[in-house]
Image 1 (cartoon, rainbow, N blue to C red):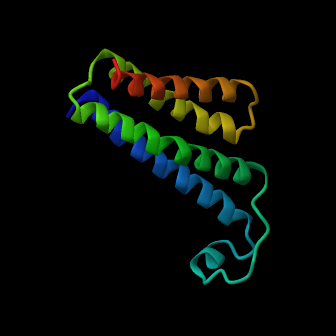
Image 2 (cartoon, helix red, strand yellow):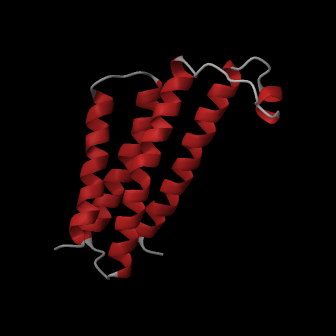
Image 3 (spheres, rainbow, N blue to C red):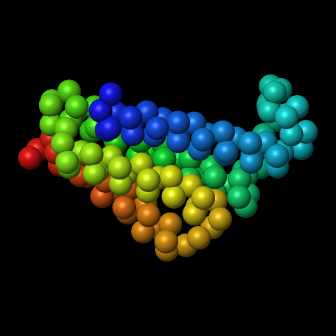
Length: 132
């Protein structure tokens, strides 16, 4: 397996971490907790707040960028365009997304946005490898 595909696989794991963290935090806020989560959930609930809301937004943000990253990386791999640019791009995307989750959960401003920008640079590097 290439390093890029390995980072793609780890990015899937990171996506699962986002989903589980957001769901667990939101469940802790609900009256009834796990019983509510395991039930039909027919009654409307207020949106999550605090850390649970930040984890939900971080998850949503990850789910917005990950399909683009995966598509670009797989296209580069299938086109035989993998190399230094895709390796560095995948590495930057992955580690920036790893850093993004705790920064967003902790409510750290500015640095979180810089880290998000770094992830976008990594994604664009992978994408550019297709056109170079």
